[in-house]
Length: 244
Image (tube, helix red, strand yellow):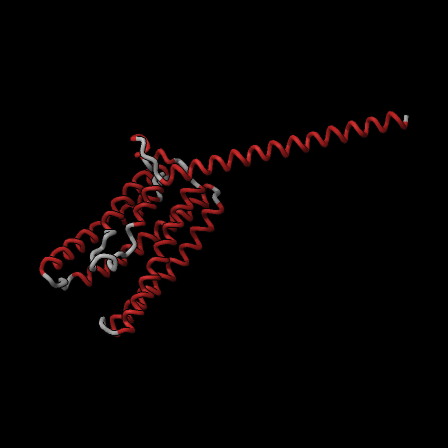
């Protein structure tokens, strides 16, 4: 259903500017493209994902504009003025996309009776909203404190941690949907056709082994119970014969 592509797309939502000289080594635009691919598959099975897909297109467009401005600023030696307001719009669109995705997963889980996915998506949504709020509050606090102060550095660190937790929650909700609603790696990961394995392939194999082990345990348990029942019936008959 495309959950694998959505999960991989969310990996690129992490802010990685602190790794290489203020350059985002995990660009959001790549993540949005992967998510659009996954949402395209998902919308074929569930119309609810169509709205999320449209939002992803908007996010991709805003992110592309922001990326162009950042490249211009990199060569010009100064950050363009429009980067800040467009960056705020990009962040708001990202939050909206993740909230819509988790709400869609919540409703889909309720429809198909996947109680664990429903519970997980709701809890992840609540934590995501809280952490996103914390990120915005601490980021603004850092701006008011001044970029060069020690306090601002600590505040920005808290903001970054909150962002990581928020995106991780969204990724967990998506992976839970993959785990409890759809374990069809062939739909999500077409790389299988080229003989390239993905983490989802190994996860599917582990789930299959666990299910097979559980089925064997249930069969042995049923056989033991059946054996006990036969033995008890035989013992009762033998006792009746002796008493007769």
